[in-house]
Length: 355
Image 1 (spheres, rainbow, N blue to C red):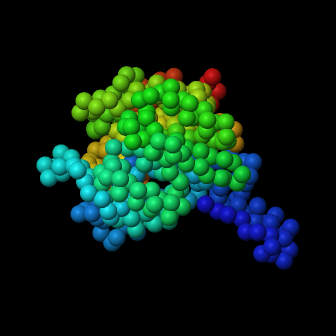
Image 2 (spheres, rainbow, N blue to C red; image 1 turned 30 degrees about the vertical axis):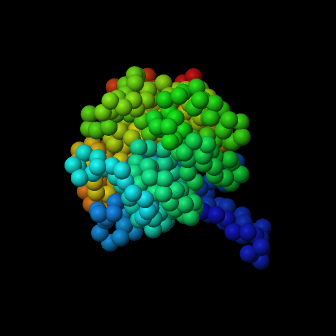
Image 3 (spheres, rainbow, N blue to C red; image 1 turned 90 degrees about the vertical axis):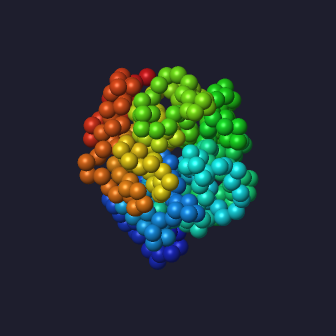
């Protein structure tokens, strides 16, 4: 994010401020107060766990996307694990059927240096190492200047050139804002709307796996666990006043739709999930969503930039644009009248006129 220096730093404040303003408009940096707000969003991130850490320490994991993320005012991710070196897992992981993720807290710096400033910790892995691991994750995010939401009562807030931006993260678990209680979720969002200019909702929901790319209009189950009615939930959040809904959890991309001039991304899939995650096939498609909103939250523009994951390696830009193409195709199937993206991964502008 780009910040203007105080005029007291310059001898000819008026002239220099004018030149600086023109430069910002020309170089693609975030716009000035009163203009639109730029949001970058990705899905599940897990930078490696204690016995499977990336080569070289992980500092280069986001090199291929850093510039795009830093050009945004708000940059969101879901941390699918803990950022800690404390706590004890109660999971039985030796069979390979259960997973517990503990990333060294120093890796939080890599997220901040990549430009991320907003996180969800509402997911099924935040408690992998008990309350101690969860608390250290919270402290790690705070230490690195990353606002977060997840635990009941904790919502994130950012100030973007005078615009108040808030985010509430939901999951189908009682240790998070509870996604399965839609009336209560509506009340949480309505309160945020009253006190903020832009409200974002994060939802960790849905079935997992390669066959979970479709977006059903019913309660989803995974290993017998209720994982939410994602369409009903997302529409209810927009009806309550939210401006953007960001989904994650299925570990594959899903469709996007425009509903009442607001964007819903039903799943942003995996983005940077080092080791222990299956990143073959569609699970390796890593979309980076870039959205531009008006100060009142209306959707102005957007696109998906495609990356791809290779097991144990840093993210790579995908010239074949597989993630964007998949999201477009899924939108044609699941939301034919409100599909958000064209085949190139750009927002279908006509949807902005839908009621």
